[in-house]
Structure formats: structure tokens, C-alpha cells
Length: 570
Image (cartoon, rainbow, N blue to C red):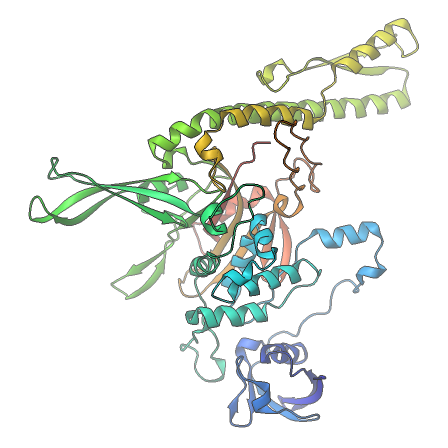
């Protein structure tokens, strides 16, 4: 049905807007917001028989061309025009097009939906999830429509450079999880709107809804689903009675989608909070003593997934005031996390050889990076000097690490020669020395390192699709909460830039064939560790140096949900 030209009456003024009956009422409210400045969560659109709601069916309203709707609500600031004129993609040159498409898009807030927006942006840090969702018939395997709606939303976000209105996904989310459709009763009358929700609960509900999505495992055959393989850990819990040493210990296993970080008055670091949650004292009925007794509960992970979710326990129930309260304490979190302290002894034994070797190789990679940077700087200085004087600077690499030894054998020698020029015999000797001693392409070293590391992986871990084989992680996404109240405030998502711009992994080699070189460098600079900040529809660069400001300690943004990705071997 074609859009209808209708009128709205607000604050004594009559304004023209377009109403598309094929779009949900929230889209009509957004159009009204554009001309009145009344936010949708503070807006009341009067229709025959009541108020227009987000789930109202247009067929029942039967809007007509030229109809006038009464709008009630206090206007905020009107949307400001763009600072720069709008330029369409087809009018951009190659450089402008690359820049426009490089930055990911934001999601518009549809009325206290920042919890959902931050969660959706952070889950985009799992590229394997988008691959699984886009597979043919993948979303048909789920009994709920949420995976299909998520797949459609991510697809639309990848096809545009403008902020997306997640109306369709929000409607499906509220139908699947009714609690997210709760109305805020504290604001009565026309100010009432949807209530703020918990981002961690949203994360859990979405992940749970994805549990039936099949796993795209390539050549390996597996009956696992995606969430089970890539996001699920296995927790082993041992319960021992402190007051009855002879009582047999109780051992149980449980699949977990997250690990918790308890925050007490002495917690300063994430690792401490996690260990405090894994080792606890509880009181329960003892069958040996016939009464309640103190038990020591020791929990350790028997399986680590490729993506490890950490939940900062920042909200707690206070019985004295009978409501949730926020723990404001500052807790530092690492950008690189060694999870071997969290696993069982059996799993640690399997992971240690490859984990130790990867740490050594990372040091060598860092040294090679320094050498290349230093060589580049010296070469640039030599070029500048040669243009202003006859002196030349020759750069010779006198020792190069092969990736199998230590990084200390990589040395730069800078030789200033006032008399040796490329045309002389001495100069020719220097040229041969430079040509024979330069570092090889980084992909050559990575290929050798990958072969070596693969020989150290435990056969059991190698056959477990989606698990971490090293226990070494890097931080790729964060959901933060801003504000002092547990049931209010604002959620923001942060995602590492390399997630969106990293090069695609190389295709797997055939059995017996040499592994292909590592793929081309990522689109971002090699040393770029910066992040994107997703504040609803506002997407901005976030320097890595500012991550420490998300530790907490006040009402500003503090880390609430952290997503760690298992480090790549290559």
C-alpha cells in the first residue's frame, strides 16, 4: 500500500507527515519526531478508541489520506541537520567510498533500547556467528523467529552507511521475551514508556535463542550447534564438606555460557573476582552429620570456548531497601587474558605446551615488528639525508630470527658511510649484505610458526570444534553501564576495530599439502589497537588508551559484560 499524506496537530501547529501502513507504528512515530522533536518514548499519538501503540495493527485504525492525528508530548531539541552535506555512495570517489564503508553503522534508540543496541553491536564481534546465521536454511532450525530477525538485521547493517532502526528485531525480541516489553510505571500519564532493561539479561536471552543454529564446521563433521561449540564452556564443580573430611566429595558438570566476576570490598582486578566466584563456601545439609554444615565448592572449567563471556556482577539485591543497587567499585580488566588458572588440571596439562610456545612466539613477533619499524624509519631518514647531502645511511640486518629461536638474534646495524657509494666496490658489498640480510615477509614466519604450534595441540582439543586450544584470549567487545541506578542509566557497546577490518583467514590446506601463507594484512594499520564506541546511532573512534576509563569507580561507564576471543595461532 502506498504511503499516505496525513497531518498531525501538536502544540497548536498542524504539520504534514507521511504514514506508511506497511511499516509498524514506531516508524510513524519516528517521522513525527523528525518534525516535532518529541521523542517516541514521550509521545502519545491519539487515534479513535485510544492511543497508538507499537503493536497496533494499521488495518484496525484504517488511516485515510489527509487524516489529522493529535500528538501529545513535550518536545526536546529538534534533530539537527548534518554538519556536512549528504553525499550518496554513487557520487563518491574510491577513497571516499572506502572511508564511508569502513566504519560500522549504529542502531537508533527506539525508547530505552540502549541495552539491546549495545548487546547487538558487541555480538557482532563474533564473525563466525554471522557466517552461521547467513548459511542456507540455518535460521529455519530454530523454533523461535529471533535468529531469523537477527540475521536480517545484521544483513541490513552491512548494506548501509546510515544508522539502522531495529524495529523488526525489537518487535520479535519482545514477543519472544515478554519482559522486554515491560512498561515503566514510575512515569505516569503521557510520559510513560518502555522500561529500561538489563543488557546482560538481553545477552543471555539472545544467546539462548541461538542455541539451535547449526554449526558451519567446514570439512569436519560434528553434531554440535554453533553456541555449544563456540560460546559454551563446561564447568566441573567439586563439593567437599569441611566439617566431615571422610564424607565423599560430590562432583558435577554443567554447561555455562559465561563466567562471573564477583565484586567485593577487596576486589581490584577481574582475575581476583573470577577466582572468588569459582572458590566459595556454602552451607548445606550434610548426609553424614545429619545437619547443616559448611562446604567448600571448587569450580574449574573442563572446556574453554573460542569466545569467553565474563559477567561483572555489578548489580546486587539489597534487602534493606528492597531493590537492586549498583556496585560502583573500580575493577581493572585485562585486554589479554590467560585463563589457564580457571581450568581443571587435566585441561591445563593439555594446553600448556602450545600456550607456552605461543607466548614465546608473540615476543618474537613483537621484536620483528620493532625491527621493521626501525628499518623503515632509518630508510626514511637516509632518503631525506641523501636529498640534502652526499652522505648515505646504509641499513644492514646482521642477524635474523627464524621464528624457532629467541628474538634476541634480531639486530639492526646502522652504518654511516661518507665515502662508500653504491657505485664503488665497497658500496656493492654493502648492497649484497643488505639484500641477503633483510627480514622475510611476515607470512613466511607465520607459516612456520603455525606448523610448529599445530604439532603441539592435543589431539582431543584438535577434534573439539570451537574450543580454545591455548587458553589465551584477547578482549574484543565490551558492554558498559553508565549511571548510579541499577534499573536506569545507559548502556554503550565497544568493539575492537580489528574485528570489522581484519583480513579473511586463509583457506585450509589439503592433507599433506603445505599450509598457505597467512592472508593479506588487515585494513587497519598493523599497530592499530583502537576501538569503536557504539552509543546507539552515534559511532565514534575510541582510543585504546581510554579503555582504562571503563574500569568503573564512579557513575561514568563501567564494564559490565566482556567478550574475550581465543588468540589465533597464526
